[in-house]
Length: 585
Ligand SMILES: *[C@@H]1O[C@H](CO)[C@@H](O)[C@H](O)[C@H]1NC(C)=O
Ligand SMILES: *[C@@H]1O[C@H](CO)[C@@H](O)[C@H](O)[C@H]1NC(C)=O
Ligand SMILES: *[C@@H]1O[C@H](CO)[C@@H](O)[C@H](O)[C@H]1NC(C)=O
Ligand SMILES: *[C@@H]1O[C@H](CO)[C@@H](O)[C@H](O)[C@H]1NC(C)=O
Ligand SMILES: *[C@@H]1O[C@H](CO)[C@@H](O)[C@H](O)[C@H]1NC(C)=O
Ligand SMILES: *[C@@H]1O[C@H](CO)[C@@H](O)[C@H](O)[C@H]1NC(C)=O
Ligand SMILES: *[C@@H]1O[C@H](CO)[C@@H](O)[C@H](O)[C@H]1NC(C)=O
Ligand SMILES: *[C@@H]1O[C@H](CO)[C@@H](O)[C@H](O)[C@H]1NC(C)=O
Ligand SMILES: *[C@@H]1O[C@H](CO)[C@@H](O)[C@H](O)[C@H]1NC(C)=O
Ligand SMILES: *[C@@H]1O[C@H](CO)[C@@H](O)[C@H](O)[C@H]1NC(C)=O
Image (cartoon, rainbow, N blue to C red):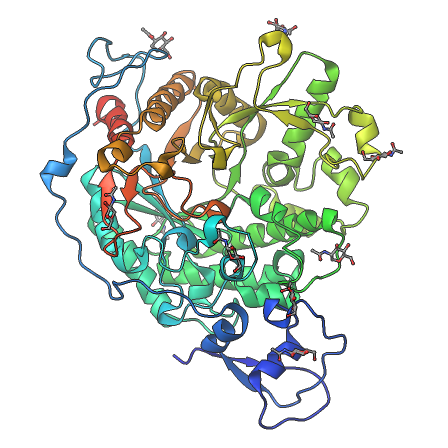
C-alpha cells in the first residue's frame, strides 16, 4: 500500500508545488521542529498535498537507529542446558513447594487447570524497528528523540529488544518455560501510521504472524490496543487524548484490529493504565502543540476521552466477537491509611476515588464519575449523556488490575477540607498524601523491601495482596473474574551489574514472585475468583523514562551485544515452579 496521507487544509489560498516542511509547519503546528512557536493563523493551502510517513519522521523526529538484525529470524531451539533451574533460595514468610524441600505443599491451594499464567511486554518497549515496514511516529519517539532530559541517559527504544524481528525466538523461549499466555500490545502507529486513515498492511501481516506463532506454541495471545504510544499526528492535530476527537479514531483503529485478529484472539484489553498516561498530560512545553487547557485539568479531559473510547470499542468488540473477553487495564497499589485518624481514612478514600475509581466507578458501578471526582470535573467537563453512561456502565468482562505494590495514604498538612478548597495545594485535587514508610508510632519502617531507586513507587508488599484482591472483588468486580494483568519487581541496582551469573541470580525479584503467588493462592482459597496473571516482564526492556537503567525482566537481554542475546533469570524459574506445584493438570 502507499503509506501516504492526504492532508487537507481547509483554507483559502493556493499553492501547487508545496514545500512539505512549510506546509506541515502551518497546518499542524508546532512541534520541537518548530521550536515551540505557534503559527497564529494557519493559512494556506487549498490544494491537498501529500505527506508520507517518511516526512513525519523527517519533520518531527529525525534520524533513528536500526538494529543489526532487520529481517524476521526463525526461532532457535532452546538448549536444555539453559533450562536447568537455579539452586534453592531460603524464604520464611509463606510455606513453599518443592523447590523448598523442608516445607510441604499446602493442599488447600490450587490454580485451576484453565488459569492463564503468563508474561507481558508492550510494543514501544520491546519492538524496536522504529521506522520499519511503514511505522509512523508516536509521541514516545518525540519524548525519546527530542525532549531534553525526558529519558535517563537519552536512551531511545529505536532498537530495544528488536522483538519486531525476533518475536519467534521470544515466543519459543517463553514456551520452553511452559507459560500459557503472552500479553502483547499493538502499535497503533504501525497499523495506522497517521493514527487515522490508511491502514498499513505490513503491520497487519506482522501481528498476524506474532499471533499465529503464539498459537503454534499453544500460548494464548492476549492483545492490548493501546499502551501509551499515541500516534504523533493525533497529538499534533487535536491534542490526542485531550480531545474527544480521538474517540472515533480509537474506535476505528479497534475495528481494524478486531477484524484482523478477532478470529484467533479472545482476550482483549482496550487501554493500558489510563491513570498513568492521562497523568502524563500536560506534555512537555515546546515540543507539542499546547491546546490551552489548564494543566491541572488536562488529565481529566484525557480520562473523559478514555471512558468514551474504551466503552465504544468494547461495545463494537462484543458485536464483532460475541465470545471475546474484553476489558481495560487498571493500575495502582493497595491503599492503606497511615494512621487510624479520620483524616487519613478520608484521604485513602479520595486516593481510591481519583485513581482506580476515576475509571472503575463509571465502568463497573454507575456509568458516571464518583462524587469526589465529579465535584471537581463538573466545573470544566461536559456531563456524560444518558446514552454515554449506558455505554460506559458494564463495559468490561473482567476486572484487570496491574497490582504491583501497596502504599500508605494520609491527609495533607492543612487537612483534606482545606486542600479540596485550594487548587494551589500541591496535592489538589486528590488531596491525599502518600508514604512508603510506616508512621513514626509504628517505627517508621519501610512498607516492604525497596526495589530499584528508579522505581521508587515499587516495594515488595506481597503480604497485602490478599486484602488487595478482596478489595477489588468487593468494590468493583461485582461477580466478574479478576486478572492480575501485570505485576513484577525491579531488582535493586541490577543495571549496574556486569557479571552474567550475578545478573541472572535475582534474589529479591525471586522472593517477590514466590511470595506474591502464595499470597494469590491464599486469596483464591478464600474465594476470590482470580482467573489469570501476567508477569511484567518477559525480559528487560525500555522502561519509559528510565530507559534501560531499571530492569523488570525475568530474562536478561544484553543490549550491548548486537545479537541481543536473552538469558533466563532465577526468578523465571521460581514463577514457573509455583504452577508446576499448584496448577491442576
Ligand atoms: C515554521 O514557521 C515559522 C514561522 O513562520 C518559521 O520561523 C520556521 O522557520 C518554520 N519552520 C519550518 C521547519 O519551516
Ligand atoms: C529554540 O531555538 C533557540 C535558538 O535556536 C534555542 O536557543 C532554544 O533552546 C530553542 N528552544 C527549544 C525549546 O528547543
Ligand atoms: C542528552 O542529550 C542532551 C541534548 O543533546 C545533552 O545535553 C545531554 O548531555 C545528554 N545527556 C546524557 C546523559 O547523555
Ligand atoms: C498551556 O497553556 C496554558 C494556558 O495558556 C498554560 O497555563 C500552560 O502552562 C501551558 N502548558 C504548557 C505545557 O505549555
Ligand atoms: C460462542 O460460544 C458458544 C458457546 O461455546 C458457541 O456455541 C458459539 O458458536 C460461539 N460463537 C462464536 C461467534 O464463536
Ligand atoms: C489502629 O487500629 C487497629 C485496628 O483497630 C489497631 O490494631 C492498631 O493498633 C491501631 N493503630 C494505632 C496506631 O492506633
Ligand atoms: C506530604 O507529606 C510530607 C511528609 O510528611 C510533607 O513534608 C508535605 O508537606 C506533605 N504535603 C502536603 C501538600 O501536605
Ligand atoms: C493555598 O495553597 C497555597 C500553596 O500551599 C498557599 O500558598 C496558599 O496560602 C493557600 N491558600 C489558602 C487560601 O489557604
Ligand atoms: C554483553 O555483551 C558485550 C558485547 O558482546 C560483552 O562484552 C559483555 O561481556 C556482555 N555482558 C554480559 C553480562 O554478558
Ligand atoms: C494452607 O493454606 C490455608 C489457606 O490459605 C491456610 O489457612 C493455612 O495456614 C496454610 N497452611 C500452612 C501450613 O501454612
